[in-house]
Image 1 (tube, rainbow over the protein chains, first blue to last red):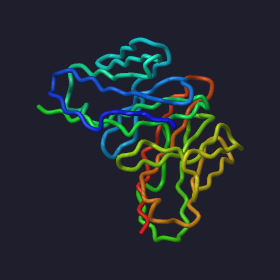
Image 2: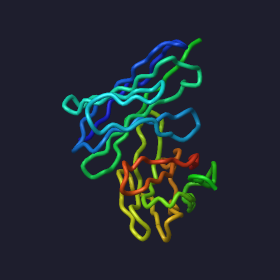
Image 3: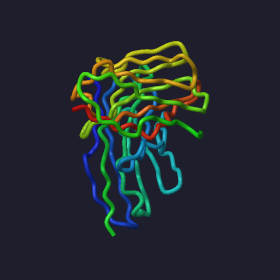
Length: 109
Length: 113
């Protein structure tokens, strides 16, 4: 079966750095996505990785290792507005997105 | 309109009733999707459409139907609602030929009693 694993919840302090991990087992791999979802709102696109390595976009970076079936999302200089759920999704061999259950990130002052 | 809109925002429905959730996008995206999101679970694909005139079944299609008469609209119909269909429903779209980043509508919160 296909599986995406993420921690259910994480807590971090404003101004700090947090790393959210995602491991996956899917039938084929055609890219990995990270989305942010604030409570009661729609998911919004953060990043896309298809090759191994680090993609940096402002305070957010995403890393991919295809051989390990592993990705992480790194958030720097955390702000209160970063409190949200972070969803990891993998596009499989049929080009369908398989979604993790999401990691709820709580930022404390 | 900018992006994707969904209607209604929320709905309480009696079991056995028919309900259509509406989704419209103005980005001229070829592909559209319907997901349901339940607490503790990832987004699950119900139905999708890669282009106007075609539809396909996702992971959890039973009890739902869709149509794609044109590029912009992708309605989702529950023929006879059941309590297990209580969920938040998201419509999404993506442009074919690129990285297929999906863009989501604001969602419909549906409660079936």
